[in-house]
Length: 273
Image (tube, rainbow, N blue to C red; front, side, top):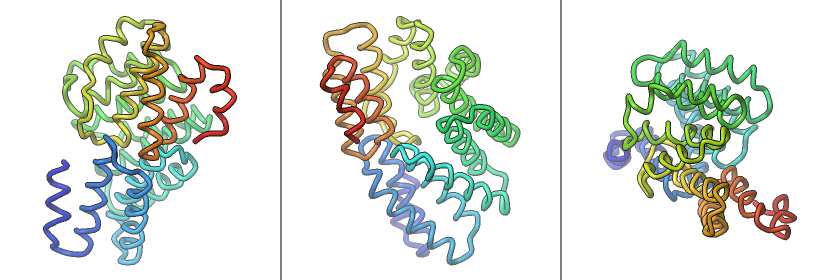
């Protein structure tokens, strides 16, 4: 996907293609260490381009991508607004993969804002429109919602067939491992979570924003709960990584891990990021 995006950006067939290609390439780069703030600026510009020329399909794609950047930045209301606008644009032009992704972003945003019933309804809408491989995306996004905001045992049920189906050493496989690990941690199944953490590869481009920050966070959380001597260092490493790329959603979570080991740090949780 990264190669295709790069080719699209460099081919220069049209200003629209260049703009979208550049935005996609930068979004992919945020899965490791790409700057989320700079990517957001480029996506905003791309969205305005397609808004002006009336291309509703690519407007929807751009808005959905922007929404996922806002999620990683911790700007949840902005993520929900982008998801709703993307859904409106895409419903007018297509019912493809991009619409499913936008509905899943809406589902996550609602869950984070405390509307779990609304979130689950949005997941069902996404699942009803999904076909083929995208059913895997629905499964791991729905399981993320359940692992963090709902029922961890339901998260594992949703993932029961997915991890084996896609394999751990793939984009979809590793994205499924993240919620699986958090669900296992929530249920106290730390040895199983440790096996999942060991399968996650470092520094590999993924289709999810701030994936490397999330991997580091999972490692730090597990180390903390197992009372490992490197827990503070891992938590601080995860926090620093996330802050540097603007992934404040995950920086705040890492900050809590560090704060668990220090009363001084705990007092600073609400003042940083």
